[in-house]
Amino acid sequence: MKEFTGQNSPVMKARNRTAVLKLLLQRGPMARRDIAAALMLTPATITNVARELIQQGLVEENADLEVLPVAVTKKPIPIGIRADGAFAVGINLGFTGIGIGVLDLKGEIHALEVVYYTERHDPATVIAQVVETVGRVLAASAVDPTRIIGVGVGVAGVVDPGTGTVRSHLSLGWRDVKLGQLLEQALGRPVTVINNVHAIAVCERLYGVASHAANFVEILVSTIVGAAIVVDGELHRGLEAAAGLIGHTRVVQDGPVCTCGRRGCLEAVASNWALLRDAREAIARGEPTTIQDVEALMAGSVSMVPIYEAAKGGDHLAIELLRRQATYIGSSIASLLYLLDPDLVVVSGPVLDETIDLGGTDFLGIVRETAREQAMLLNVPDSRIQPSRFGLDAVTRGGASIVLDDFLDTAPFAERRRGPLPNGSFKTLR
Ligand SMILES: [Zn+2]
Image 1 (cartoon, rainbow, N blue to C red):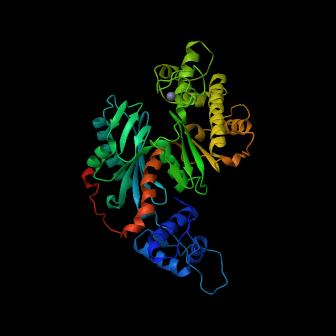
Image 2 (cartoon, protein in one colour):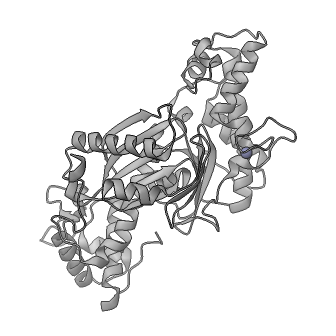
Image 3 (cartoon, rainbow, N blue to C red):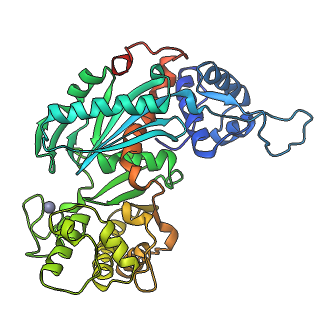
């Protein structure tokens, strides 16, 4: 996803189509002459590109939309992306369960379901669960299965996106599982596997608050803490496709043990599981608290709801835990600001969906204040650290976004026409 510039040469026709699609996605419906001006192409070129994209079913004329009046007698009709131009299935293979949804080309989610892992975590069991849930979600979405271009899976762990192999999934205990290959066989569709935070970043660039930011960092505060880096509009994957694993950088010497086996990692002090562990320990020490469901918490529940609810009621322990989490995250963002000097940092995770007073400010307020204080040599207005709009579905949307992003980059090259797609369908799932 480079900046949206086009070139007026016959061999660049396909690239021009991609540039037009991405511009329309970013800005919404536009008149052809405005597209030409934005991409520095001739109006005739845009007229041709628009005709082809309309034939391909990816773009439509929005006759009912008003565009700015121009000093000509003929009113231009804006063109915009067709939501049903393509669909993708997104899968979040998370820490505690699986989220599955269908996303259209404009980034709207059509059906969504979350299922939890059973006692058995072996690949065959989890894949069977995925296949069954995909079938249900597709039926609920009422989307024509032949319009689905692929499946994207965001994984909480280290993956090799080239082969779709999950090198490690800490909660499932997987090592070198050929997930992409196994899922392709089970679903009969192309499958892309990617790190979960990388997936969110692509979604944020296509459909979220980072659509205008060429350089940004996404940070996920959830069961894990991780980051993804986008430079010049492109996701920076890194040598091992693991760029952004800041959750395992050490922030406390001799701190608590992490899921990776080392001590004092950011994730071991600032992830949701770290907070739940600290809550358990405090309750076991007899600290006064109004946190509910203490039994479930002590039995290892991974739900943050009791902490959030107690904090909303003014519980001292819950508020202190969340304040500390926000401070660690803000501090890490300061490091990222110094390291990369990005246009924007986007913070995602369940806590961003909550409205909790943490002593005159909220979670994001503490994050911003800490980052500002620590990165004092930089200018860090609130607008530079923004919350994601995607909430709990972020990784599911991200998985589908990876597929749609690739489609936007390559589909116009393939002279794709509307109608059944060539390589099989989901019919085996119905
Ligand atoms: Zn670690």
